Amino acid sequence: MFTEGDPRLGKLLDGIVRLAAGELHSRIEVSPARDELDAVIMGTNLLAEDLQIMYQELEQRVELRTRLLNEAHLEMQKMALTDSLTGLANRTALVSALNDTLAEAERGDLPPAVLLLDLDAFKGINDSLGHAAGDQVLAAVGERIKASVRDTDTVARLGGDEFAVLMPATTLARAAGVGNRILAALDSQVELDNDSVQCGASMGLCIGGAGQSAEQLLMEADVAMYASKAGGRNRLKVFEPAMLHARQLRSQLIEDLRTAISESELVLFYQPVVALASGRIEGAEALVRWQHPSRGMVMPDEFIPLAEDAGLISELGGWVLRTAVRQLQDWRAEGRAGDDFSMRINISPTDLQRLEFIEEVRDALSGAGISPELLVLELTEGAIVSGNELDRYSLSSLRKLGVGLEIDDFGTGYSSISYLRKLPVDKVKVDRSLLKDLGTDPAQPDLIAAILQLIRACGLEAVWEGVETAEQAQHLASIGCVSAQGYYFGRPVPADEFAAVLEAQRASHHGS
Amino acid sequence: MSKPLGLMQEQIVRIVLPRDEHLDEQSARLLAAGLQRPRSGSPLAVLLDVTDVASVSRAARAVFSNVSTVAAWALLGRTPVDRILAHFILGGDFKSGPASYFTSEPEALKWLKENAHVH
Image 1 (cartoon, helix red, strand yellow):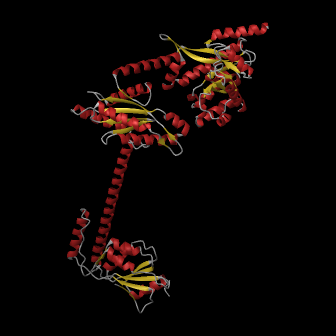
Image 2 (cartoon, chains in turn purple, yellow):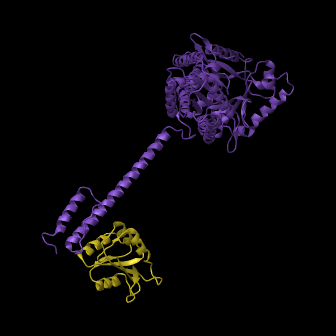
Image 3 (cartoon, one colour):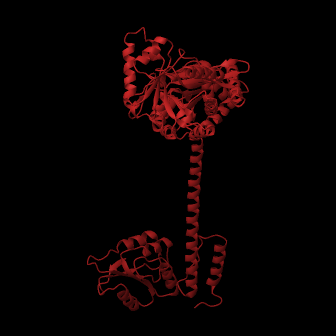
């Protein structure tokens, strides 16, 4: 046993003091006596070792977790600057790189150039081949652009089918060369799993000037790209200040159109659809016009694309729907239109993409107390054939509602015959181009008869558009065509003029 | 370091840790590697003599507690220091069977026979 003066006690105390000071590696000597005091010393040593190891393990774990956290942070930073689909830079990364190069240009370097491009046929590819194919195309396009530029250039996808290339310290000639190289690279087909598609691009280029911001440069490249789109696709346009003016005019027109919809500057004209056998007007097609306060009458082919681009097409379509249905209600109330008189309106593919559209049609009809079969919605062949799930859902909902559905411009698109049988429509409107050669081309009557047969075999009925002469009308009637439309029967006219025509018809009917 | 005890049942293995030496993880592993279950399939019991060992590292202690082939461990010592050391070894979670400390070899062997079901 140990005694009071045992030096080991002092050593033990000193040892514990060292441990308390954090020197967990220090150990206290165990004497050969190996008695109880030595046992306490041994226990202290072993506890110190345990503590030391636990600390080390904890530190290692903290170090590991910190490293993982840093890696995750870097990965997130990378993700935040990367477009996940193509692996290219995203808008944030591009703007940041652009700011850097602009700063370098301020210090005396050559200025940067920005190329902006968007794909011409992309929406069609997405709609007809699906989003997976669309994604494949975007990835392939990204690769091609990357292969066409220098390593020091930044290629970014800005969203959708819009790409950008930043070329630091360059000249206009060199940047244009790169742009044309990219256009050439995009000119060849992109091979997909079961298809191959061609995807041209519209491209705008601008060179950074003194004191310009990244946003300004991108805006100018964007303006140039729109000019390229307007001037025919697959070409490079270099930004010029005059383009800004054109853009402003366009913006002004869009603003005007917005006002036009809310301020009732739009008007509907009506063109008769006639029963060939009797010559009676069986319906009207409502056609929208814009009574512009300073520009006069603007035709739809000028402002419909504008409305589509500006996202106003649904508002415009809604206005046409409500106005036409109300007009039909008025004519019915006035006794001008009977139960066999239908109203036709044109709807855009965008409408089918909106679930509210079906509600709007239902509300317009019930609000006016009009039976659904008196409304015929005309839509283009492309919208029906290449539509996606949502389009098909909308079409079948509209059919369930009871409204008539008609393919517009039939014969100009690409419906396959087998597809025609499956389409959820009741009628087709045969395009005017098919009547044009009647009377000059000896083969045309046979062709028209064959088309009529084909339409009937598919269980559909046809309205023949573009009838301009009595001969055409007679020929169509003679082969059993039911309905027709065209200048021969009447041009599109304002509502009051059309009402007068209906009135005259009613008078003659009563008179006869 | 480990040798079968000729006079005892073959299933009991005696390990005498070297006196005045520090046992580290590597040495412990060498010892543990020799602890294979007898071909007869009868359980293996270990008498681990820690008498006068200078110390056993934490990692070495963990090696013993993780040996899966041993059905029972008896730790044998003499001094209070041996006892503390042994109990630090026993502090590990012995997965394969019971483990206990003794200061008498006959008692340890008796306990082993009872607890390892050695016949």
